[in-house]
Length: 246
Image (cartoon, rainbow, N blue to C red; front, top):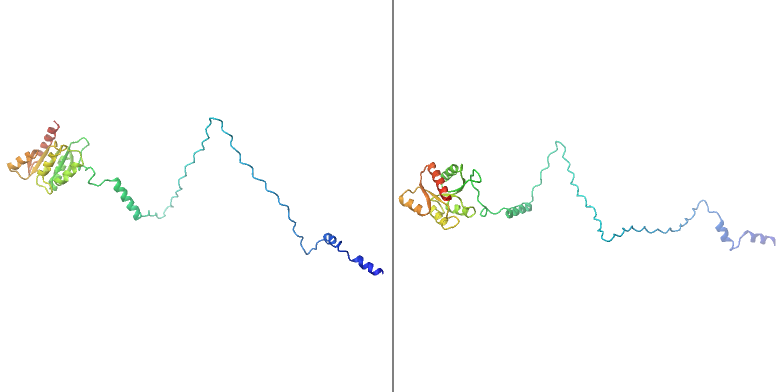
């Protein structure tokens, strides 16, 4: 009868078994299960400080101006290094530059002509209209010491120049020229109120009395036949300009 009692004492009851398992130490071979930490609530960020309210009549403060951007740092190439060639402009850039130049620079037909010689801004203006290059250049050199000189190779070119410039003080013109001769040019000048007062000096190889009379009737102040002396021409130029000023 005593043996069964011993067996009953050696085996715990089901009610006592969980307590023994909970109080039993963990085995060194098995790690202890991690213990979950309680979550810590995050504190909200502090509120942004508010600007003090402006008193009545006070203007809002103006923020300081932004500093200008610094120029890019340029590093000089080392001594002896080959120079880097500048990039060639593209075709589009060349076309854009040409278009801008056409807008800024008017065509030659609208620009005011420039004199070929001038001793100063206060000099009297003389236009030489002669189709012979040698005679025209000789006249320009002789007149350039005292007068501002314009030149034209024929009557048509001279008329186009006169439209785009102030009337000169004197015009020296040949009679026989291509496109428009001296007679036709003189007729057009005398029909324009702006150019009619300009004195004319004719140069021509036609020396008959009839030609001289025709030149005077066309409005010439003087009529010189070729060949002529340059001193005689300069004297007649000065006389014609001084007479026109009266």
